[in-house]
Length: 204
Image (tube, rainbow, N blue to C red; front, side, top):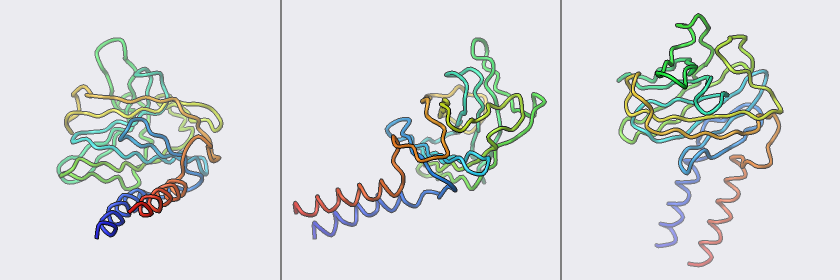
C-alpha cells in the first residue's frame, strides 16, 4: 500500500510537469528561483516562452534590459473572467516608475498570448507567449540567437495595474535555438525523475 501511494504521488508530480505546453524547436529550461521556472525556444524567427509561477496577482515577464532598466515586459493579469496581456516597457528606473504600454508610447504591441492559464484558487500561473526576435519596435529588445540576455519575472500584489511589484527575479541566460547543455529538457527531467522513482521503490 505504501508503495502504491508513493508511486501515485511521484507520478502526479511527473505528469504535472510534463503537461506543460510543448514549444516548437529546442526547449531550454532555467530555474529563476526555487518555484519560478522559465522554458523558452527560438524557432522560425520567434521566441516562445513558458513560465510557471505561483502568485495571486499579476505577473511581469521581462526580456532584456539591466535589472529594471529598459526591460521589455509582458504583463499578465486576471480581470475577473479571463487573462489579459499588455506589452510594456520599464524605461524610468531612476525616478518614479513609469511602465506605460508600448502603444501608449507610440510603439506596437508585439507579445502574443498562446493560452496562458491562471488558477484563481491556487494562484498558479502557466504563462505561455511568443514574440518576434526583432520586432523593429524601439521599445522592445531584440533577441539575438547565440547571445546572452537578461530575463526577469516580477510578481505583483494584485491584478490592478499600478502597484509596485513585491518580488522580482533576474537571470542572464544564453539565448540559443540549439539545446543548451546547462539546462534540462522535459524529456531529461522525466528520465531523471523516473530514475529517482525506481530508486525509491527499490528501498521499500
